[in-house]
Each structure stands twice: as structure tokens, then as C-alpha cells.
Image (cartoon, rainbow, N blue to C red; front, top):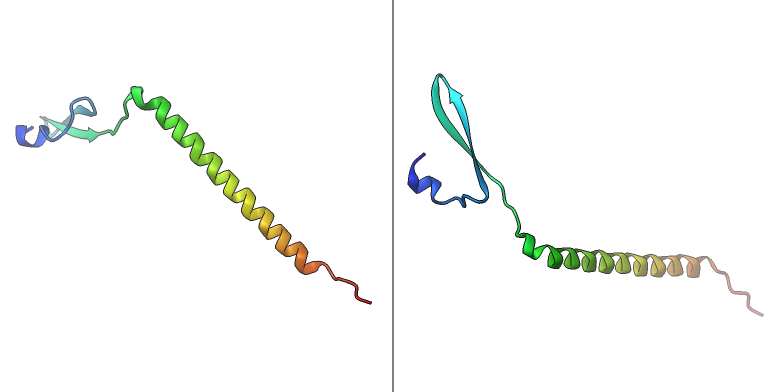
Length: 79
């Protein structure tokens, strides 16, 4: 593989798999993005916060919608 091509890939995130083609030896580059294990706690915390915020938003919108639906179906007696 030419150096100008292979140098653009991080060797820690690329795997070189030899694939024989017509009796010739060649390689296929598979680029796999991976995160750092040192960032795992921050990623998990951020994910948990986003999930809780989304759940809170959906709960609030469900409550507001239920109130609006119930308000429209209530008939007030006058006189």
C-alpha cells in the first residue's frame, strides 16, 4: 500500500486484512472509529443526562397534552 495513502489512517484504529486476488497479495483497509477508554465516564454521564432530559421533556409534553384533552372534554354547568 502506498505510504501517502496509509499514512492518513491511524494505525490504532485501522486493521489491515490480506485478501488474495488472482494469486496476488493485496490488502483492504477498514477504518474503525474507536473512543478512548479514559473518556468512558464522561460519555456515560453525558448520555444519562440527555436521556433524563428527553424523558422529562416527553413527560411534560404528555402531561400538557392530557390536560388540554381533559379540559376540552369537561362541560361546565351554568345556572
